Length: 87
Image (tube, rainbow, N blue to C red; front, side):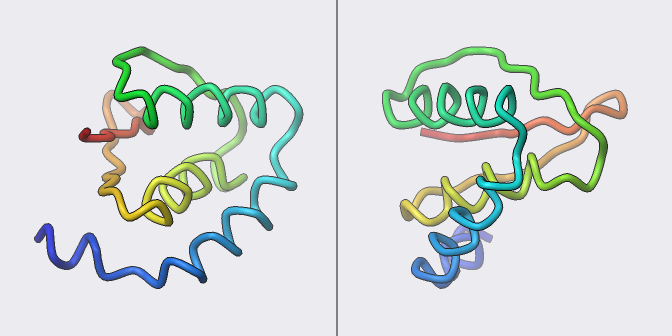
């Protein structure tokens, strides 16, 4: 499964992340940046990103992490989407 998780087109993901980031509202963009900094620094933290389903919040984060060559898995917990970002 790890091999499949690392077989993404890095350039396509980076472009998609850029496109989708611009669609996030200001609060979501701030949260996105804080989450990515935590991932880069391998820091454990809890984040809540509010917004209607289907607005690209989770996919934008997944694409950003994957575009850096890292593994990111989306999981749902109690009806709330959550990210599992292993270091």
